Length: 185
Image: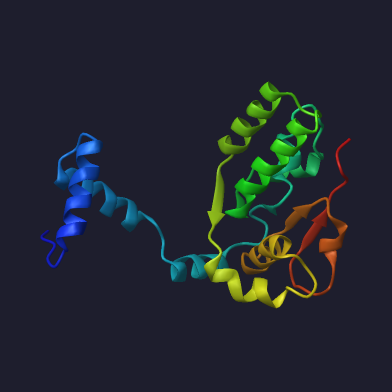
């Protein structure tokens, strides 16, 4: 394959990145093209979401509950987490924020927080980007925060149940299937 019309600046940047990785330019660009080709387009994601069986697993804001070491998560949540899990990319930031808050508040020591963080990233989670859901998230703005609307919009699109401890998400302003679980102790 030959690639034409690549600016000198882009070509130079690619050469520098390849050298930094200890690869030839050809190997580096080949790996990048493979990564790009393996990533589905937004249209493919939306089509896959529309075709999905609603019982394949949770979209869950409450994975945080499952990684809070020293607390016993709800059995239904653990069972759901054993299957396929979908979540907005926002989930990772929320997990990091929750663990930081627990540690800073003295409710979780550093080693336990680090273990919980490793546990979170060990889950196989299909992370969904925001753009395909932005219009729906915006439409929910009068009833829900943008954060909560991310989870609701994804649960509607999959369609898959949203597992949460937040009973406020079980409202009627959306079409998501919300399963409210008890808070852990």
